[in-house]
Amino acid sequence: MTKWITCLTICVGSTATPSHASNLDVVGLWLTADRDGQVEIRDCGDNTPCGKLVWYDPSKQGGPLDTRNHNPSLRHRSVMHVPIFWGFRRSGGAWSGGNIYNPETGQTFRSKLRHSANGDLIVSGCRGPFCITRPWTRVKK
Image (cartoon, rainbow, N blue to C red; front, side, top):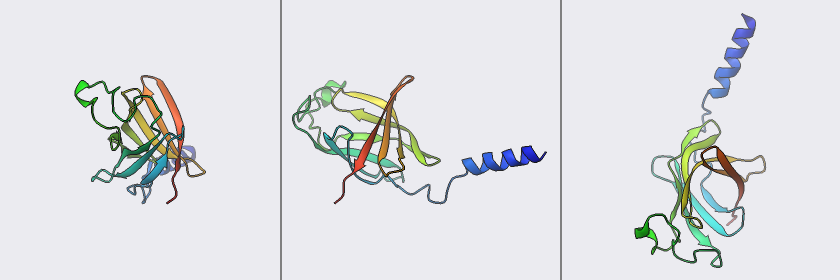
């Protein structure tokens, strides 16, 4: 019985939502892992994070237009201020269940966001069982 109570205490304690869970701890300006783009993260209006591209390296594929978008009607829009991610929900100490759009490929992936011990933003993009996880660095103003 003691083992069961200990397990129950640990299990319930580990799934409880911390009091700061609704805080948007990912808000700010982030430099992508390849250092070729900056994404501004803000509140979507529902206390969840949304990100948009606010700077990119103009030498990257696709140039200033969203030419690789799978939707032909969006291929003539600028990549600047294009929504990069949306649809997240808080899951413990991370944000999960969201989507991330890669304008270099025109693809959208399932995504998760979390902080690393050193303060980087760990961004995962997944298609099927395959995921790529990359650290983004906060841009200091």
